[in-house]
Amino acid sequence: MQAPWFRIAPLALVAVLAACRAAHPACPADLTRADDGLRLSAGVPSGDVTVATSGERARAIAAPLAAPPAPPPGPAAGMAGEPAGAPIEAPAYDERAALDAYVAATDFARFDLAVIRAGGARQSLAGVTPAGSVRRTTVTFSARCPPCGGGDPGSYMDAAASYDAGHRPWTLVIRVAKGRPVHVAACGGNCRPCRHDIP
Image (cartoon, rainbow, N blue to C red; front, side):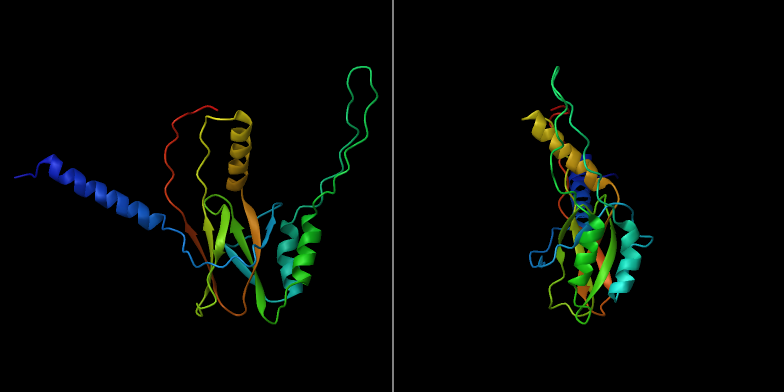
């Protein structure tokens, strides 16, 4: 004799919720964020995690993944009847120079540099395993939910652009404890469906 559906349905719902929690565990509260690392955008590592134990090795692995500075903007077009204006002076961010500075500031007697594939579910660095964990270093990412429509359209478009950029592949370079294996984990709750499809 088969059990009535109203007895099976609650059990199935509990099983689904348990599976979702296992796939998306809550982020640990005791993660350290003393070093948020360096984000590189020109490429992605060939492996999931590569550990460099020296400055020379770190530069060899990470330099091809760093974008050069963007060229300065050209003259801005003026309004009708006016000459073109001068470009806005804004210093271009140079990932290669930032990488050189980050490597130079690393004490390789105490730290290694981990070059980690990111993007997709690995959008935001949640933190690194606390110092009390002696077996391995865990670098934990937290995913962000996609923005929903409604409210200020400009804010929505900014949030959508940031979300899309986070899903593209990028590279994280971060200091990790010397000599420990590096593990990557993801955390965060499940995303709720949006109530609106348009801003």
